Image (cartoon, rainbow over all chains, first blue to last red; front, side, top):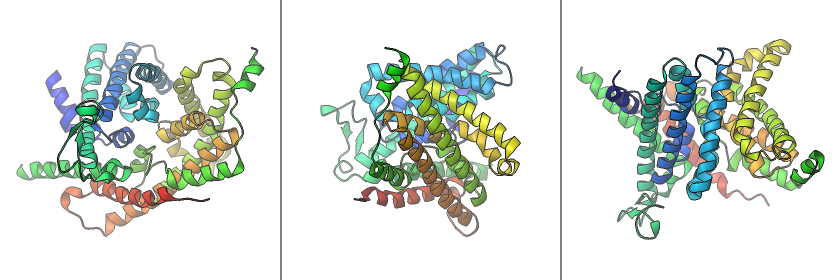
Length: 209
Length: 210
């Protein structure tokens, strides 16, 4: 499969979050703002790429019976590296991701790709698979984070751009934000509506054929 | 400093009984694992299609979380802290939990076949349930005592059970009676009802006990 097709399938047709509905915990919990969503997405992507590469390199040495434990150990090693580096170089991001940074280790997407792809394929395709799946996951997080921050706080990218790092303020929404959207209930609601929109277009596409 | 002195120095202080009771209530209602903290969402949506399986999964989670809290607490304060290996926490805990789940599964199969019939299929799912690792890390981050850790583990599990059973019964009802737009059928409407449930649990955040 070509890189372009694979990227297309990972981001749109077979998106791990929207289509396979795995990896929901970080998707719901860390998307209270766009910057958190990007941070989480990139951290998970780096872990995914590295663990895919290492697992695919070691695929002939890992015994079949203990493979899950071996995969988890490799993933946990990379998660620790990311966790400690973020705490050292980006402490504010690490603080706002909090518990969910070490919890990347139990992200179903990473273990799922290790089991389904990296343990059966060569190094380069596995690395590409990691990149594509990572982009798909980040895309889903960014979509959630963008709309939740927009509706819940009326800003875009708060914490990184604009005056006093308050983000780009959207007039109207900033004065009267629907604060529920950045609360837990809003996470479920936004996810439900995004999935409904996707289902609407899928149904429409099916109807056309 | 020898090993025993290092263990002594690293142990967290004991907790007052009122603190522990408050911890238990807040773990179930105020900081409910699924609906407020989003820990364990994958299995929450995965196994909440029927109330029976939801109850089984909830019970298995309580059981594993209680055990994992004890074992991870012991590993942290008797191995990692005295040897100054705290940075290995994530790796150590996930391995301990994976091993623990495997052992529990083997033990149950042999000693309690009827319980294994009921809970067995859920056990492998629990290894990658972030609620278990989340509880272990929270216990250490907040420096709970051993009793506090066990109580927190058990009652966070009870919170999981409460949420998943309520949600499973809502979903069962949705299957038969609810009429919704076609694009909302299935998973999206389940998420919207989870959102309403989370809103109901938000009411508990103002809870003041004393």
